[in-house]
Image 1 (cartoon, one colour):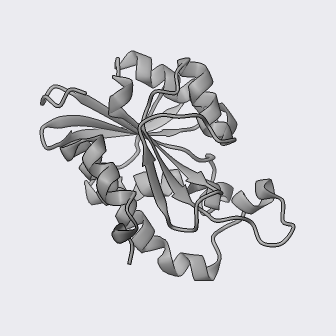
Image 2: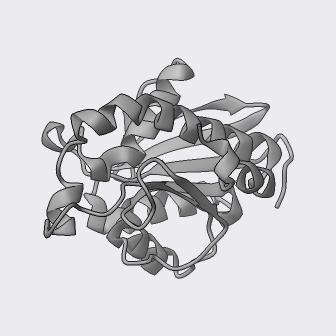
Image 3: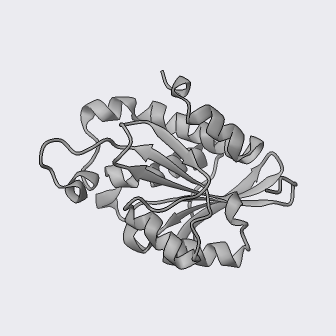
Length: 198
């Protein structure tokens, strides 16, 4: 993996476009990018290849933030196009998404792998023809009782979950910044550890 100042990183958040989905659990990838952009003084004012995009430099590296606007299940259409246009090295792309199999608020950073049933990731894998790209999964926990997982992810976070959401978003942003500044392995060592959590 290259780390020169000429590198371009793509940080792609997954979610569904539209105000009605904005606070859904499934949209936590969008939420992370919205908070990161706000910290950087940026706004998502451009539409490019079906992505809302903004960009800046972090530690001398060009960083593109992209929120796919094709709806979750077709995320690969948007992410694939922007990846090819900017000739992004797949090891310098990081996809942010939700995960039902992780406890609520737990982060899991991985260098590659399958979709584990996540339709957004599956669409990206199909479009790129590769599983070899980093992804940051953010745990939602399992749905309570017999609630259908598809319904669960399209619900807003509960009041109890919302109380922890800011700290989860903060942790996710710190993980992204370490990925860019110090590399994937350093970020994995820190944020996949139980010691990363209060």
